[in-house]
Length: 336
Image (cartoon, rainbow, N blue to C red; front, side, top):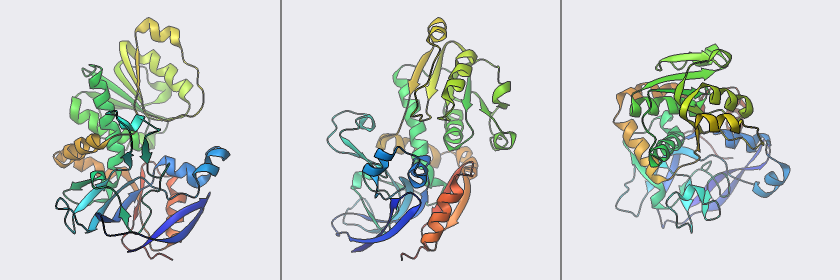
């Protein structure tokens, strides 16, 4: 089968290319794709030059859902809606293989992503979903949050009366939804802009960062920049024996007040990426929760119905200014 790929050959420059795929596996037609900040960093060239040199050319996007158009597997039928899992267990022997960077592959990072006409991926990287909606293209973000909950539980940490989430983006939004549903506790959102905080109308409180002075059992950092300032504030506002959960990615060295951490007995846990079980748990929770379904529609800041390559570029350019997710509808895309 002839396939079309949209390859980032250099920052802000896509090229349509042709390749062949065989009919020896399930073939997916992408329906909705979600742009991640990692994709945006490649697109804008905001990675070190040596990394860009090694990574590009690359097919972007690792968040999405699609439809089965061919199947030789009894578990998948033509027309099934599926969630696409971007991480492939290669030679890893550990359970949380997403942390085994040498023996795993991650789409739109060290292998090609989903920005293609057709996708052929191992059957174990597909999960059937009940229906296809644009907001479900963000399941990958939800799976990362589910992994963070699993990691907390693995450490025996799951009794929270009050949680603060620092950040007002997609990671914070998914965190607020899932932590509220699972732990049924009070949740506050902390941010820098009132208009962004207003989107979190389902939590217990919203505070500007400079005004946030309450005490919490768990503080979730979902920003990834200005980490020095954020960590200092979080350490100050955590209860003794509190937990700081780090979700945001920061490539810079930061300073942290170890004296205060040790005085208060604070536990710091990081969580990054996810595995298939986390996707399954996230999808099951969403598909059985009217509460999450009702609020999850808000995670789409903009839906771009792509007709051509220019629309793909437009989606990446507009993504930078959107609070939540920019979703690309691939159904009407004509490959040049």
